[in-house]
Amino acid sequence: MKFNILILLSITLFFSCKSPEARKPISVKTGSFIKKSAERNKELNIKEYEHIQNVIINKSDKEYIASNSGFWYTYIKKSDTLTYTPQFGDIVNYDYNIKTLEGEILYSKEELRTQNYSIDQQELFMGLREGLKLLKSGESVTFVFPSQIAFGYYGDENKIGTNIPIICDVTVNNITINTNK
Image (tube, rainbow, N blue to C red; front, side):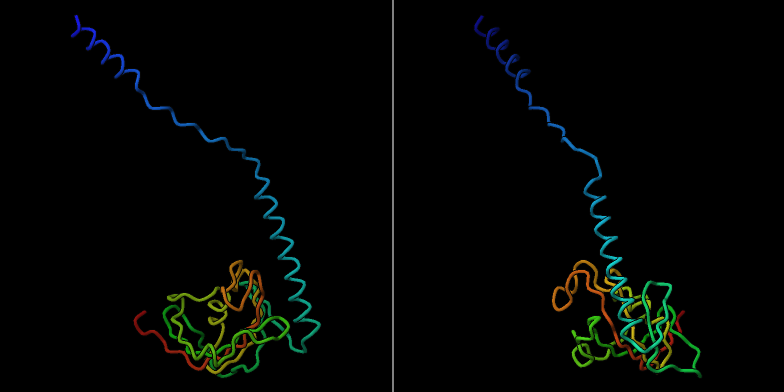
């Protein structure tokens, strides 16, 4: 009899020990945060665009060209004899600086030193990556990059802050053509 009670008690304990069910999260999908964030970004882009237009139209005597990639540029030195622009895998040797829209130098050419960039095969912020593809050997250009194709929301975590448009003066020293295409 004790044995039967023990077995019955064991079976009862075994089936009554059940882990609690996980609670399902309560989520509200209103999208209000995303909508507010999108509105903030639109307002930021409009203000930034207006600021850039003020700089390149009202404060400059040079004519700027609007690129298909969302930045503006003007030639300091243009080559009328060379026709080759860098293609995938070519190495571009260049010098550049980074300035604010007001012209304050954030990084000088000396600080940044001469760079070598393999077209579309290395990390480089989007604006400069696309801008270098437009230049020929010996050309110098001033680029105006909106923040979203420069250093964006995070900046460079040093001298370039959040959502800061920049100006870069770039000189292409030479282009080494990739013969392994």
